[in-house]
Length: 98
Image (cartoon, rainbow, N blue to C red; front, side):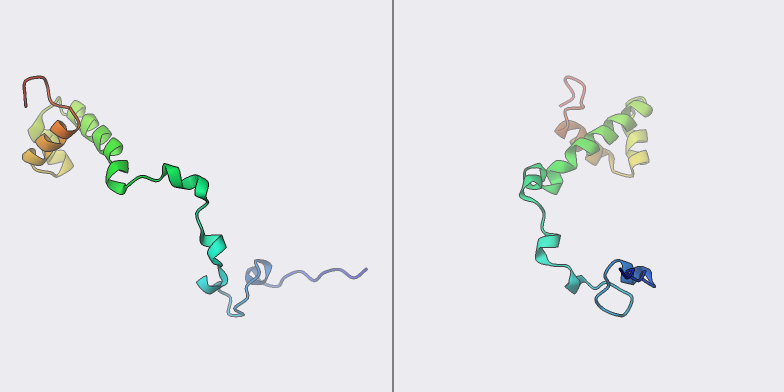
């Protein structure tokens, strides 16, 4: 039984159909690019998905700077008013500070 010849280049090994040493997006089918339906429920709007990490970063910085709003805002490169609004949004204000 004859042996199958080994591919000469990596492109031949992965099934390059262009002949130019590159796989072009045209080779990929819609089915290959599709996201399985099971993954869809975990996808949230970007704004919502970023709330948890933003709150964690704010809390970490506030703790590091001893809850100094000036130092925290400077370190995060945001204004004090933006920091205040984010603290209010994420319920990080001390009671009576509203």
